[in-house]
Image 1 (cartoon, rainbow, N blue to C red):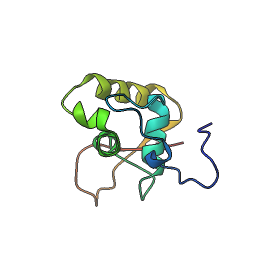
Image 2 (cartoon, helix red, strand yellow):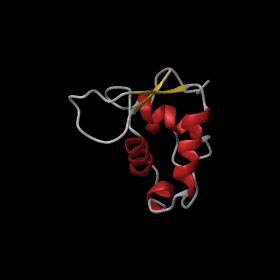
Image 3 (cartoon, one colour):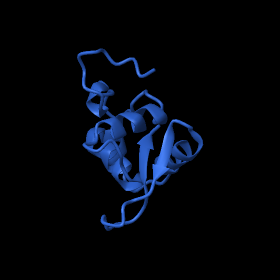
Image 4 (tube, rainbow, N blue to C red):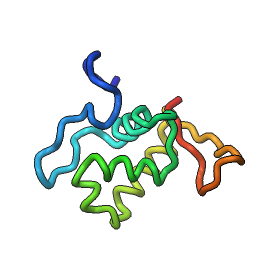
Length: 102
């Protein structure tokens, strides 16, 4: 489904850098899956997903204050059945639940 060669790590670094000023060509669900797969515990909060995309791609970093792409990420997480929310353990302070790839 992700079409990543077998010798490449499954994370956002598997995606080639887009041309300057351009958004990655991969759809949001693929980007989110790679962000989650690339995390140490294979789960991320919504804010951590945003941060992973901003850390990896200039396009997201340059638009960190814009809500449109963030709304699209939330929309994809909510409607795409490949993503599932899990509660944050009570021993972990913070806001929001975790998202995992089901």
